[in-house]
Amino acid sequence: MFLDGPDSRPSEAVHIVFAGEKVKADDLQVNPSVQASEHTGTFVVLSLEALVAMKLISFRRKDQTHLEDMISVGLIDRTWIERYQTDLGHRLAEIFDSLEN
Image (cartoon, rainbow, N blue to C red):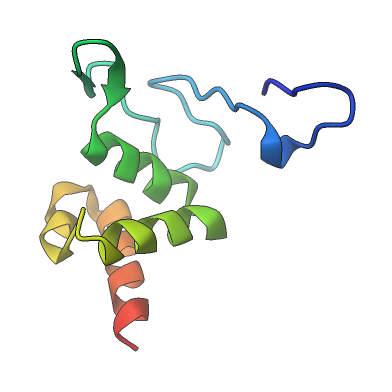
């Protein structure tokens, strides 16, 4: 994590996540590889599918909120549940179910 000065907080930091590795030992799977990226001409960015996977792997409350936001603006829908391995798909279904209740 890169902090901007001695008084900065982790919530304001730039966090580095290594491709193909787990952040925490109990994560369901490793993070997506760098091959799961797209070239925009100027930048190389993580694909939306890989970003959603990372959010499902971490699954902290803020990751769940990010997923809810992606759903609310139409970036992802229920068809995305089938794109992920069983446990990640279940987590995404949980988000959709919580929004419908």
